[in-house]
Length: 191
Image 1: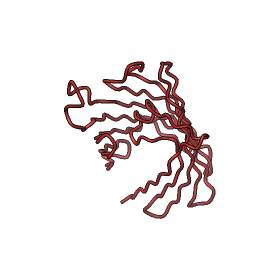
Image 2: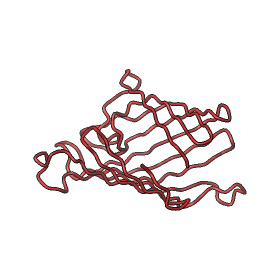
Image 3: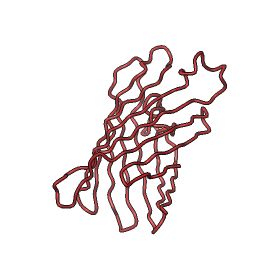
């Protein structure tokens, strides 16, 4: 559930069945692209704080449950048909398995191409750039988006197993091009 406090600030809360993750997020527009070109890109901060709500016997300390994700999204709409974004990110888990680092940096690339006034094709690539013994696989997603007056529907194929960003960045072991993928569906409603 997300709520826009202003046209620049959104807060949200989510929960997952896997690992019983509870996440709190904040998204804030720092700069907005202008039509006249005075501001050529949009810059947005996105971050979340996640708590693993599995039983307490799975953790030594309460802080072992926490993980964090921070991202700066730099986006540009080139015309009515095409937009692109690049987004460096930082993921952190307070506790990880042996052979892993607590922190991981990644760069995400995304694009959207409008096919018709109500349908778009989406592409997302996420490349971990932190070197460590345990190397997560790159993320890859392709999908389509259909829009109506109040709803947006997305159907996509991805190799991400996790719903939380830091989970996908740190632990993804699926290779999209080897057939390790899942099918996802999102629906957004604007009031």
